[in-house]
Image (cartoon, rainbow, N blue to C red; front, side, top):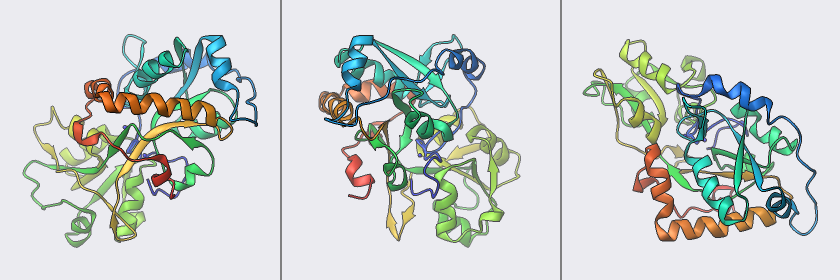
Length: 308
């Protein structure tokens, strides 16, 4: 629970790392997505292209906002009881309530279909912990990030090869894995790792299994997903979070809600409430149950991550 990844739709991904950094669903709620998705496939009304859009007014009148989610723990998913949850949906419930919209409705889709689905008006907002990057900023507008994220490695207990950065992976000729569409693919390639040598697995659970079985030395993902997935492992651990290098400089990712480019009025109103939650500390209380730490709270702005 997305980065300088070259594909504008790849996770972290992310958020997220993305699915932050990043990211695919772990275990819960996958079976429930199909049934809920069938109810959310109709197109929403076309947004106005003037005056910042009229969507916020229509949402208030309708009393419901449709959230595009990707079935990815902990960012946005359906739990074992069939309920919508995750850091982004729970935050959306609070903010949209304050904006006069009482209900949220999930529209599950693949992570890579979130931006196309948003722009095709299949839902009103992307609530999937999506990383903000310049490529995505050409297609949608983002609220300011509600969290920031560093990378972390899953390694065998004791970290026998001493792997703490992508440079370490290359210098020690470690067998490297990461997830499908993860930003960490590009981070490793930028550091000098040959892309064809990277083992690509579906998610962090598969990455943990690969490390435990000795098929790879290291799996790269977001700090949050790495530390959560190793909690019950007796064979693996997560390394200390670190910032990957992008253009030679440490880079911190941030995950945020995405809106159609015409809907600046809705995005701006969302940002006002988000800033209030940050200032009061309520944002952390909303995100903490999903594994977020205070170190992952942020004052980054979408403008910064979009490249100014």
